[in-house]
Image 1 (cartoon, rainbow, N blue to C red):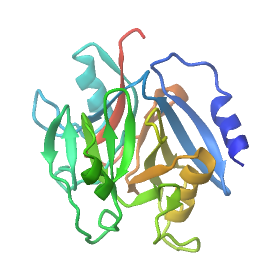
Image 2: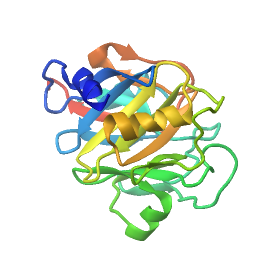
Image 3: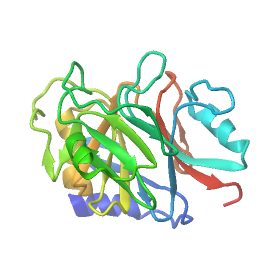
Length: 247
């Protein structure tokens, strides 16, 4: 199955070095869109508020307009963590090296509090998913970071509370990373799936040793290379690939 998935994903036309590679993946009878980034060749960033207005960016359309002011283009984007009604991040959030929300280490209600949860951390030429307590121990230099939960895959193992026969199904999105931080996979399901099936996509089909759930139900993707631009509910944190106009 993994060989078939990789064939489907990467048998795409050659893309510019700074672009994302996106493709369709079928895993255990469910359909997904997966976008892969080489962190040495992509400018990955997190976005929350527009620095000019102070208001939440909220949508891919607004994010495109914000970047265009600086002569930049949005090459890819996805919602990247849970947020309150006013779109403040639920957990730890760093943007351009500035901590805007503190790390939460306690259990709580909802998916975010289903420990272990984790943090998507973008460093200098690398990006990795860290289980929250591992992040505390290792103290990586995150230029950008977004905490979410639950973890999907932890050191190659599924979150212990996931059930194969669960009746909880949503359109879900999340992120997985390679051990060395050189590769990031962003995935979104095309139809409602269980946590278990979504997590096995990262572990078994993509080979990601660490993966983190971003959200469900409000999951959104912007991938112009495959003609996708989701609208809908205003979003909180977003992850995007930034390119120079004309690249």
